[in-house]
Image 1 (tube, rainbow, N blue to C red):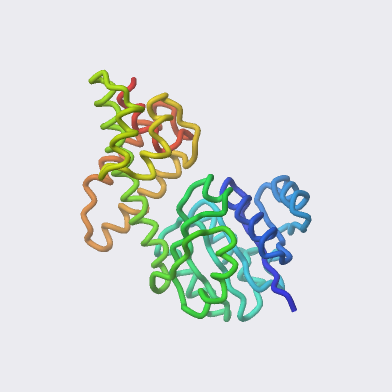
Image 2: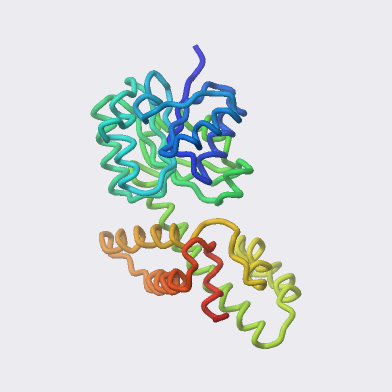
Length: 290
């Protein structure tokens, strides 16, 4: 009997990820979204069905995938009154692509285990473009057996997927990812602003330095829009502040010191006050252009 899946959460990431799963794995995928119209649109596009609740979506399937907003959203769609855990069959695996806390990952792993269900925390990196092109990086935490079951399906929308440890390890790895990105974007913003103030042709400068030690994905993909002062190209400042808040809270638990991350979190707060809540994360440069 062929495998069956459910997908919970059809935002800018979940919608294309679920689409890749359906079209490439060619298995039945039942979708649930808080806004029912979005679920109906997906079902019409990919010729499958919707469910009115996460529990209904999760009934009798082998895998449930989720990509929602935060810890509270995640609890609601898993252990809530109409959550997926109420209906999942024994041996099924829940794969959570939400960027959330390591604490909630451990909590839900325990809740799933009590019901005989697997749980993998599997936050992603690569942004909206990575989701649409099916080339995300997926950082996983959980049990090896559950990961081995789920990873062939995750492969349909990722180019890298790795189990990094027990429950919560995926979320901790995503925190490392966001800490590194924050510093890179600020450095790029400062460098571009400095060069512009100095009267340099920054497109030409970046073409040269991107081939050396300063090169990065951020430089390659965001320098032109940063120079132009356009910030409608991906991961929003509001979401980055949510993620950096998770990083800073976890650092208090483990004793890590994050001075640069804490400072850049405050710079993003300034961008929010400028009206940039939905601008992409490269908008740090806007602080210099006021």
